[in-house]
Length: 58
Image 1: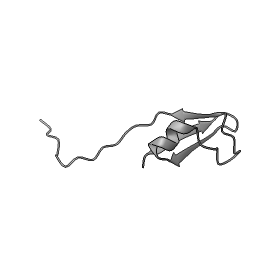
Image 2: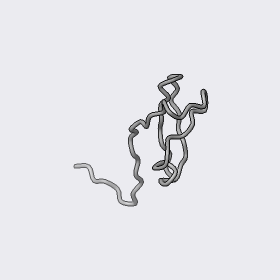
Image 3: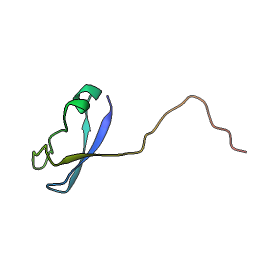
Image 4: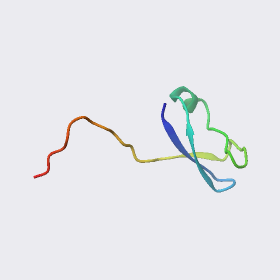
């Protein structure tokens, strides 16, 4: 399950939420601090991938 990063514009609080893709597509989560859902925006975060192959440095 992906972890999404959000920011509440009402209370200026960044937070993360563990959600399924279907939950994420339905609506924004509730802010854990002020419990608002209308002022929550999704933030773009870097992705991290683990591979089995080592990269070569020349």
